[in-house]
Image (cartoon, rainbow, N blue to C red; front, side, top):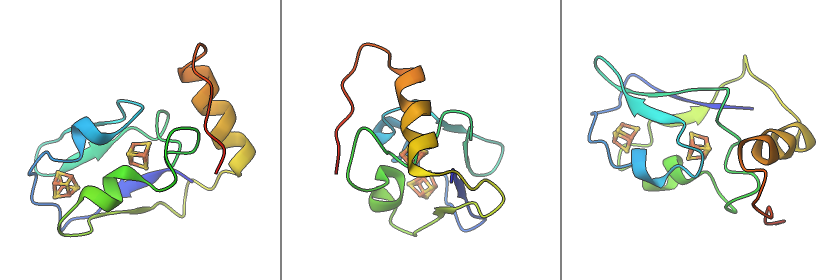
Length: 88
Ligand code: SF4
Ligand code: SF4
């Protein structure tokens, strides 16, 4: 499932450059994740990079956007047709 950023985000911006899919941008008060670009980092990293980067643990799975690992991998491959996904 895609990740979302909780209200405790302090908008430090640290996670933005860590996302392998360019899914995070500055929002009005918090950073915001585009769910169409979030793969939970499947295909690129072993763990969601926004979550491991964030000092206040604001990124969290969005239960309203459940996707299988296969769906997330397919999303990654659509975003990066020339990249070989990592399998972990
Ligand atoms: S989980 Fe990964 S792909 Fe999704 S927004 Fe965070 S860093 Fe980007
Ligand atoms: S690293 Fe955490 S606090 Fe900083 S912008 Fe990202 S979600 Fe917000």
